[in-house]
Image (cartoon, rainbow, N blue to C red):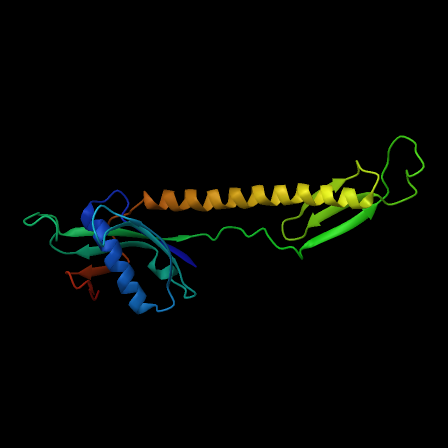
Length: 197
């Protein structure tokens, strides 16, 4: 499960709360593995942090409220800061060299001694995605196989790129969406202690 903590468009205090929340969650769920962190404008401040965990953290999805006097702006009236927690879908894996089905078939065409007598056409299917390509242009089965593999690798590479872009876009959309109110958890003070509901 991939999780993103985000300050959204919040001020420096929200960026600071992202760092504090990540440390608190690491203590609570020791299997957390950091994937990426986008640093904020000061030390220990983060625009966003992405991590993964084998634990089911779906109960954390939503907003986290931190109640604390601003550590950066003494005398500032606001004491409530919010962080968004989002579950980011894993990108679709499309690799796997053993996941191909290769079929030979008779190539059609205009005349010639090889037509319909030898199986020179090649059809390759990538089983997990269902992507299929064929090659019949060459007279050699070996050459058709090489061409078909090049085509399918290009299609799989394009699919992988699209999947990565989709994951990045979803993460960015979540980064800009913080729902204030009805937080799933509340933390208090510089010690970032959980508030009992």
